[in-house]
Every structure is written in structure tokens, then in C-alpha cells.
Image 1: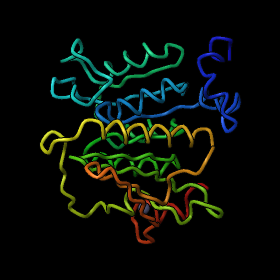
Image 2 (image 1 turned 90 degrees about the horizontal axis):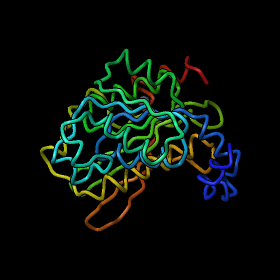
Image 3 (image 1 turned 180 degrees about the vertical axis):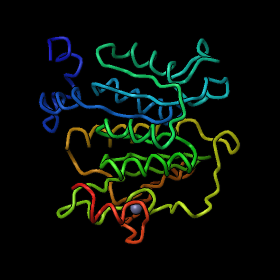
Image 4 (image 1 turned 45 degrees about the vertical axis):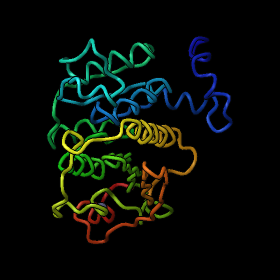
Length: 260
Ligand SMILES: [Zn+2]
């Protein structure tokens, strides 16, 4: 780190748990953020401001006036532009010293496998179950931790799915599919039809960034094996312990044959 970087990240470096070593880890890390909307905006902004060295943003949508109520990486001047590129511009204005890749595409399974395999952490900031399951499959297959968030109306949830690790930890930890099986017909309720209370995507997206930074630095205790549920009307959190489903078609086979 040069003097300018030492200054930029000084409030991280002052923290005993982070220091220069932790900040250096962030600078050498690669994060993949899927979705540059309500959750992806704050998540990516904190990853960028916090100094994650390489960020990849994936989103095939364009900025719409109805997005500006909560998707804080975008602004009036960028209505009609691709969200990935709009978000990149915002992040680059905050921190021009990191590498930011904007992919205007809807990644299919093969593309996700490629993107996930070169990431150190993945943030699922999408709003539909099909994509969440595809992202989860890629993360389990490639042994990359997944930070998952969701918000609808006044309700939010956040968790970390990390099936790496074997003996000491990880062997009993669930993947996203253990919790929400792929073959169950969960109702796909998107913000576009149900409404969403604007600050809740900020709360949950910021928590996703916090968990991702912790994972990248190896500090604290990750939010794995727990699901946090937020009732935004009462402003009350509930923590639920979640375990691996031994019959999960995504991670059960992986745990016996996959990489540790
Ligand atoms: Zn599973």
C-alpha cells in the first residue's frame, strides 16, 4: 500500500482485527456481486469503499425511474443505462484505485461457473429463486462462500452459505438449497410487483458487504448456519439456526467427494 492507500483505509487499519494485513487481504481479493439493484447497490458500494481489490458486477437490466427509490448506486442522469455500468461509475467515483468489471448480461449456468470459480466470495443480490439456485450450485461446486440477501415489503433476510471446510467446520453447514429446496414451488415475489420499503435493502445489502469483508479477511464469525430474519415494521431481528440437509441434491454429494 502506498501513502494514499494507507490514509484511505486508515479507519480499517486502526482496527486490531484488520490492521495492514487484513486490508492487504482485501486489496488482493476478488468479489462477485450478482445484481446491481437494491441490495447490490449498497453491498458493492461498501466493498468498493472498503477496498476489495477486484469487483465484478453482473446485471442485464437497465436503470428505471422506479429503481431510484432504493437502488442508491444509480441516479437520474443514468436512467436508461445498464445498471452494471451505472454502478461501476458510482463505485469508481468513490474509489478509483480498485478494479471494477461491469458485465451487462444474464449469466447462465456455464457463465456462472466461470465467474464464481475465479471469485473469493459471491454476493447474491438478485430477486428470483431460479438465479439464486443457479448461483448456489456454482458456489457449492467451486467451494466459494455465498452471502445471500433478500428483501420484500418490510421483511428482510440474510445468511452466509459456506459448505467448505470438512472436519472442524463446514461439514454440517447448509447451502442455500438445503434451506429452500430447488424442487419446491416457492412463490417468486419480486419487488416489481410487491413493493419494498427502501431502507431495508440498505440494511440487508450493507450486512452482506460486512459478511463478505469478514470472510475475505478471515475475521470474526461468519453468519453461516444461521438465518437472520428482519421484521422492518417492528424493527426486530430473529436468528434461526439452520443445518445441512443430508439429502440435499446440491451439497450432499459435494460434502463426501468435493474439495475440502
Ligand atoms: Zn445443500
